[in-house]
Image (cartoon, rainbow, N blue to C red; front, side):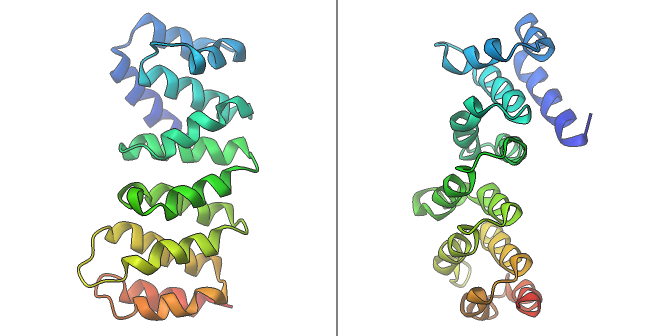
Amino acid sequence: MDEELRSFTDRLRDEAGGSAAYRRLMATGDREELAGVLTATGQPLWARELAAIRLGRAGDSRAFEALVLLLNHRDPERCVSAAHALVRLGDPRTARAAAALATNPLRTAYALQPVRLLTELRAPESVPALIRTLAPLLTPDGPHARVALGCVDGLGLLGDPRARPVLEAALTQPALGIAASRSLSLLA
């Protein structure tokens, strides 16, 4: 079991209080049962997350919508788990959904995992979404410094010259200057 999966299962076991329902969902190999948890009323969040992550890691596209909702959750641990499962799922809608979440100005505080996911996916939507997310964050002592840094780092890793103007603007920001310089050096 990889470290990300171990952390996920430990967290949900604690949330579920080690219940029989948790043990059953962890043990089942029945995708229909897991998919049923996603649509059944009255299911606790831990159960929906467990079902979505297990289905996503298994490549079952029925998990897509639930994983996108978890990617947009206020709890960073849920976002991380959802991002990992979305990568494993390989659904072609993932980059578009991550771009929509990252660029939503009302959800910028929760955009770090969508930003990181866009970088990992290297999709056509990635660079434009990261530029669009970063540009309004380039203010002195602006909020969401971690999201801005994620964008700067991601743009460097993607190496697309379209990022040059926004990375040059980031050079003047105390919290971003070093990372922006490093990212500029990586552009094609």
